[in-house]
Image (tube, rainbow, N blue to C red):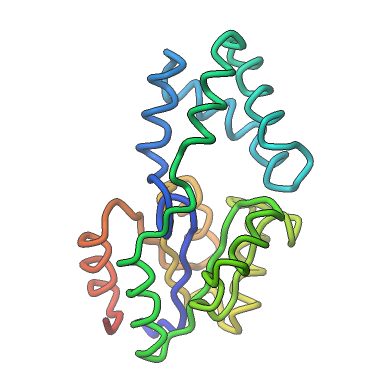
Length: 201
């Protein structure tokens, strides 16, 4: 395997809490099953990632669809208090190390335009060769086009790219496109997975 680039998801990998932990907290708050939440969330998440809905309107729509509108205020408060912009410094060190070892690095995030601005303003974007945000390209993961655009902007073929995400759904789609998928659970496990893939760390 001759990998030339490493791609990273943002939420749950570079910053904030992981997808599984996020879903666990939300479903506990709303008193619903994780599968039920996932079905509704993925039905509407393209609307926020394409800037068609504000974040608050998005969660109100989710609550309405789930029949828990009475818990929406608590949910929005919970979402706003999440440390989603709290960067995992170990991950940034890893990104810098990989670049120093000759790999191209990229960030591919399902996010709105304000997040794209935030990535630049805080200097996060400086650690990556490219930053691709769904609202800017018009495609959200797991749409194959999002992954294809990502590889194209990195200047590599899809089979030269390792992609790290905390969502199995996104990784299944990434694999279909040709990426080498790695599910992020924690930092140490990630290092093991990268070494298994033959990545020089």
